[in-house]
Image 1 (tube, one colour):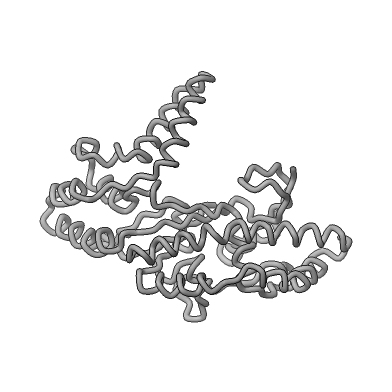
Image 2 (tube, rainbow, N blue to C red):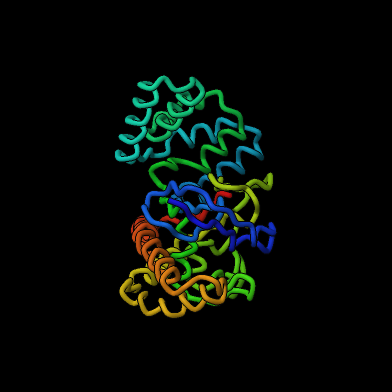
Length: 303
């Protein structure tokens, strides 16, 4: 199965727009769709009180007092959350890698990921001799396996069907979305891009550490009060209404490539809609979980 890969969202800063190629699809959904070349999105729910508020206070105290043990002790007392489904997946994957005699470096990496999934990496003995940078990274990514929700590369189609729009003349399918910090952001812009940057410590490092790309516009954060508003908005979304956007999406395809026929356009739009519908429950689940727990949400893009 093949897909045309195009880069829409980050073209203003990295000049990627217009780069296209055809590659085999390897995504969880078994249909062809226009997706973003190399750009995936993960949402991570963040224990705002423990990480952003108290965690930042402890980090800054450790900086001022030059005492790493303050942070080490704080981490040792943090609760460890585990997603059993993720653990089972890692166990099964590791068994397969061993069965097929995968290279040692691959097996070692999988063992490392399993320790993060089952919580072993968060035992005090695991970071007893860790550096300050490593301790801060551990705090900023705490229990990331259990807290992550992957939209993979479906975020662009999802964003469009949540808020249909007309992109620039050379790429009409890809509206320019207001980025993090822009007062023109809509509630769904915030849901998928974040409304603010990560809070920083006294050394200028973010207390939340992205697991995606570290470029400044590849991550954003929604604190609990914004999460609640996003959650309420997502709960009001009706997927059946998205079929009403099909004519507009079809017209954008015609503008984008006048050479393709109506049958091909219909197929592409159907696939885009399927992509968005598959991804929406993941988006909603992330914000529902965060809202129920009083957590924030980190939006993390990987190039």
